[in-house]
Length: 354
Image (cartoon, rainbow, N blue to C red; front, side, top):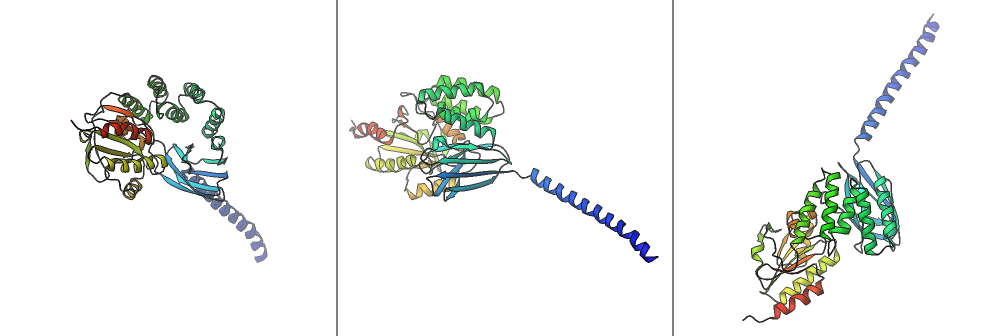
């Protein structure tokens, strides 16, 4: 009788175990799915021929993502970061060339390229990155005017795309001599298609600021705090020659300009005043670089990069950029290379006071 009972219980026990196992499996799968849906990370992987070892910089072009570094070992790198929202990143190479990366939560993007032909780098994994790659390939062999025409066509055809905002800045606002009317026209189109994009409003204000940089115009009045908490304002710029410039520790040309300005100002002590605006998101790194280079003048860094109210008000558009004024705040010149700036300033500084 016991054998019959045991025989009867065994299938029941096995059935119960199967149900329990299935329930646990379902719960485990559910937990995995739940964790997967909350996994707000972005993965960037890449291989570069001709770039065996070194570091890359990466930052958010609108200031929403801090500056970070990526190590490259044997031509390969991997970078994973938590993201709450989509963001446009700039990947900066040792020669200061940049590639835009359109990052999204839960997305994986792959970069394959040759360090000697960065314009031909392929970025894949999402529609936006592949569309941007296609645009770069299309314009890589074009002349600057042809590339600008292609950029305008892309923007007008895709006004709702984040790519258009990046291209707008690259070809129409962050250039030495912007076409103000065309830039404002394109900004207007993008604002209609992207009414909730906050940076577009700031960009419109920046273009108004750019108009203030016309030679002979008056420098807009401003007040800001430097990295040491000291107040700096437009009224302080009352020397024979005054220079406001932008820099970032990841941009060699701008750091070199800062060093050259320090040497140049020392030659004309008392006749030349300088104010620097650091567009690094990393305020600590900005301070360390300024101290290392023994910069004596005020450095402004509010951590907002290109969204900085001061940067937008003055119409400064890229790194390095600069404005030169006289003692009354009249714009003498802007967007000069360091040798051009010195050549322009030297005759004024060498003049003897009446």
